[in-house]
Image (cartoon, rainbow, N blue to C red; front, side, top):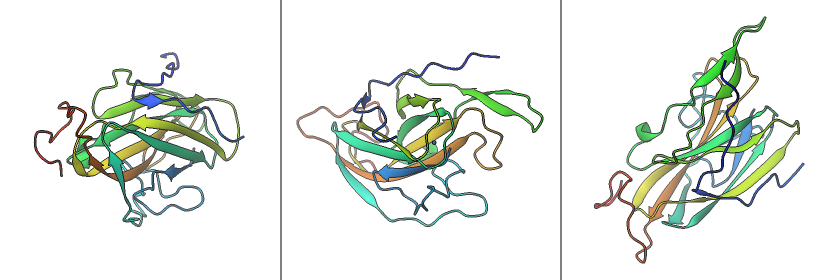
Length: 208
């Protein structure tokens, strides 16, 4: 069995934050989620952006404008506690660019497999912006986490920012296994004073 992965804030995150209040269902507070959320953040089990097989969710229609190369405020509230961590990724042309949910290590239990750890990507290459974010194993309800995420300097009319939580010590969900999902739709306009970051899809032409 692999040891639990050690979390690391990536170079793409500006750490404002440890918890700002004293979870896993979670609510995406900032930026505005692409699906309408209830008080627990549901529906959120199915990848890549939430919903369930029984409830695909209602689009919010929100698109948040962002300047490329800037820091985007990110804030979540854990409405139901579970130990684990978060990952943030960005798709430019299509949500199919978003990475698969973290590879998991499990242990047997009387009720079936339970998660031990999820693999953390510490390369910080597109499409992952930051991984291993807000690793926590201390119990608290309705805790909020906040930080800034650096957005690449690109042009994209309809990007998707994906925020997921990997849950440790959790049974298998029919939708999403050990991961919960939210997304936010962004319109990114490159800062003309900064070079375009060509490592992202669709650059050199206007991203869709």
